Image (cartoon, rainbow, N blue to C red; front, side):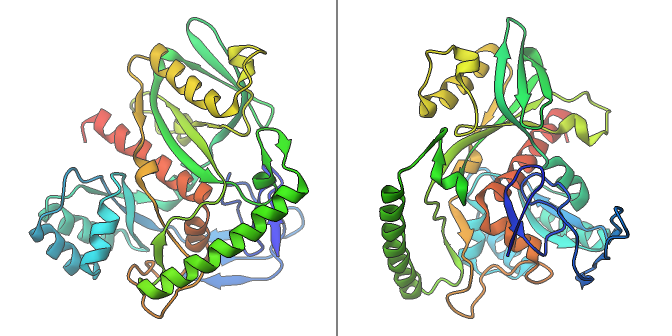
Length: 351
């Protein structure tokens, strides 16, 4: 049974303690859950008691060009993957989490092995990445000669000077539930929704036959039925400041943003709005980096394996949060967007 987030309203698994989209705390935890180092206890009145063992992530930076045979063999030895999996994971052009560890020393050992192969890897705390994934959802905006001010979904606002804009991460995400029925502020007629549902069931049967025929396990081509474009906008950080809140970006979703607030009441096209806004910011902010690498990631996990073979097993077993991340394009974009931002931040610092 799905549990709706009290902040963003999106559906989550009833076993989740936090929303996989915005990170907000969900409702009461009905029973005590102990699994893989995470211990969650019942609520004591209005106060939640939660004890979480910190995990450490080994993040791999993007690889330019093709992998040579020496690197491929080295990666197969380090992580135990087959050749096909190595090629798939490294061709996306974006940084990604290679492994999760409960001990930092094990992560450092893997990083040393990556460095011997000429790959850039670094250690990151899982809690830090989760906090960075909490984006500020913009619903409208206003601009002048020096800045853009976004009105946020929670009622607040975020001011960003053009000269301080740092990275814009583009992506496409799938709409789920009610969001799939509502595109750009209008509802699709019921008969169209029913036809769409019948067509999707037919196409899903075709996909299942194709997956079974290929026998590729549960690594399949990304299948998103209703997509919208989205981008996360990050300001240039003040080097030396370690507050995570300073690094949280503003998210603009084409189906949720009022583009007429910036371009005037006569501007209506939803699909052209996010493109025009992106080009407008790029023109005003001369040093803004536009990163499209997430759009090149067209692979995700299916809900259940087609066969018993797991070419890319999740580290530390199939964890519920990891499954939710891989099954939700929006949660997946949350993680990748944060990692892409950190990649450019490391380059800015000269790391």
